Image 1: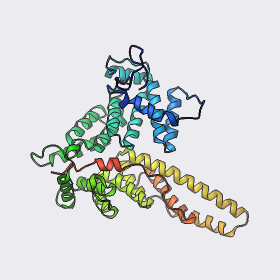
Image 2 (image 1 turned 135 degrees about the horizontal axis):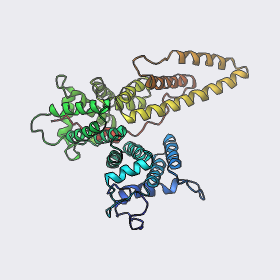
Image 3 (image 1 turned 120 degrees about the vertical axis):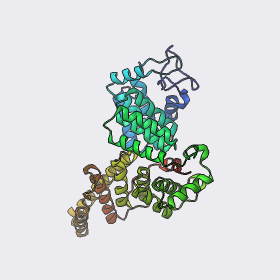
Image 4 (image 1 turned 60 degrees about the vertical axis):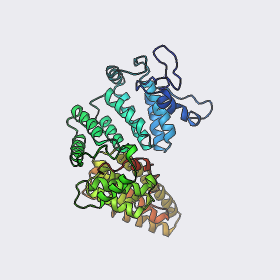
Length: 400
């Protein structure tokens, strides 16, 4: 946060951040705001100062794909929401003060921290994503999304399974009716129980991601009898897809292993397989995989599906408008293409196995592909989010 500390003095880059996290300002809100200042607005334009206005601008930047600007506006919104919150001499706010601030802002502080955590995760800054998610859960322990953000951030950072479980159990205790948190808790318990005796630190720790861990991940991914196969296949497939840890990229093999993980119910495999299929310009298949992850509570999959659906619908509308103009001018070919387009869209009704919301998104993606057939453009023109950092960070937790 770039506000002032308890004495009224503006903190320097190496001072404690005033947002209450306890981190240095340059590693927290100060750095986020400073990094984007040069690209925010035209000269002479005064930015609005209310939480809602800044939050709205952040969302607009996200929709436009400008993560840098979105991070700046979200950080300014957090600053505005927490500007009156007390902090100690180290810049840390108590749980009670965070909760009081969140109540005063009608839940906006927790929601903003949750959204910024997701953005940090998308850009590969796992530490910042974890920090924001933890602060969010302190501000509002009953906010389910904050606990889900923390769980996903820990998983993406390759945190030890026990650490992930402890965070998940805190979430379940605060949100006992959360089916997603309960399911994740028992999945983690199962994974920990299946680890061999004396396995040492989880292979997810950054210092242990060496050649032996990669070989162990591949071995487990190929072992049809090992109960850890799905998790290992998800890790190995993600590594092959991104070329992480010096491994040569191989999309064919990546898809093979990610499908093993997806069929085994691994959420990260479903999400990353969806991203890979988008990259391979197979949006219909991608929608099905992303829908699986989204229905299991994966926030990244939900956000990408929504973004792709919006872009698909915009592309369809633009195509229809152009064809209708040509048809009105007597272009018979345009009339025929309109008829074909309507027919192709009707044939892409969503599969009954999907939920209503995800089915509508999957339908939009298929419509996008139908539009591409008439325009010559590649299907799925939406920008694929940077998932390399996440996929590469999910090393083989199940590896011995």
